[in-house]
Length: 369
Image (cartoon, rainbow, N blue to C red; front, side):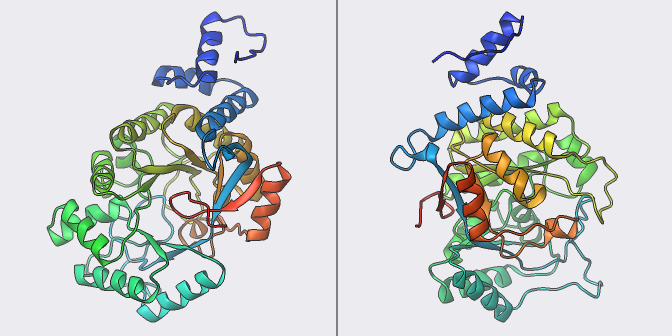
């Protein structure tokens, strides 16, 4: 099938557009050229790549289906000693509202999740300097024993690097112990921008790019699936975003362990990072470019949590095939100013209004209803 180009008097651009339409891989320089297209045209290319990626999914019906998950973000502690400049959630041990979750509180949150048809909890927290390894393993074992059907999607790479330093154990040993206790998969939190120059400006005490990718590489080799994320729209350049895409695409080539890519915009309220954030236009452009560049990712998730339901819905026409979670609970982004909420009925309406079929999935993008 030929790409029908608009009236552009640029043979090399026409060739690049046809290359994308045909599903071929692009490089960083080509991605930068595509970024400068009109939003409408870049969105059309992203939709084409979505169709190519989903053509064989769900018995050949992947292009008709938009998925979502019912889960809950549970932050086991808000105590953190890395003090990311973009974060409004963390507290020090001395703060009056610092907390560490109890087993009873965890049980209540999971019971509510199951009552809503949930299949998973997203378990993350601050880098607490005093919690012991046994504390984490006991928490996982408690959850798995009491709620065996729930998937524990927990502990980002930056948390595992924190554990490595505090407990003086290799990441591989830690992941094996966490899996034995009940961990089912690892989220992509803490990626921000996978360019160390940027990381030094926004989160200098956090895991480096190579450390973040190293945890993912280890997890994939051990059989765990993970997600890849990006928080953008602060101090990074467009070239930095493209480098981030390139790093996760290279990792996916090596191990194939990423289930999906999710990007969202920096939320500036109540944070120490003084940076101009970006709006919906830039969000859609960046997500579309991610879909085109990440040719080895089957799934791209819309970020309605930061953009709101309306833009989250529009993002389904800019390369996304998944609307994410209904978010029974979300504490980190909401502390920085985003306060959108969504129900299953809302998800179904937004998806159906675009002519797609809404289907609930699990963490591995298997349909559950």
